[in-house]
Length: 140
Image (cartoon, rainbow, N blue to C red; front, side, top):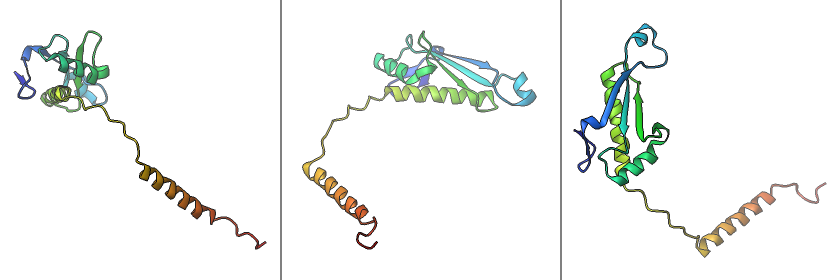
């Protein structure tokens, strides 16, 4: 069992993990050892609550296939086990973020009359300062 938080847990068989070859430089080692981890998680057929599934699909972005499978690739470490841990940490982090309730919509507010007046006064003061920087009149 994979524990996401005290309300949500995933069964081990809901996540498929596969070792693949890492891309990028690395010499002989990278060409013969599969250290990168590809983690696949089918969001739509998972045991997550419906609201979490919806938010997770939105958060996943381009990492989600058209079939609703979330694909995470971890290849930052040279060790397969560390990459496996990194992939699971990323999945758990994404699901935890999706489980949080969305923030309430922003309430539109208007500046007060006093705030508007302060702004206009500051602009007038600044404009007066700038006007004094010009050439002095009558000294030509």
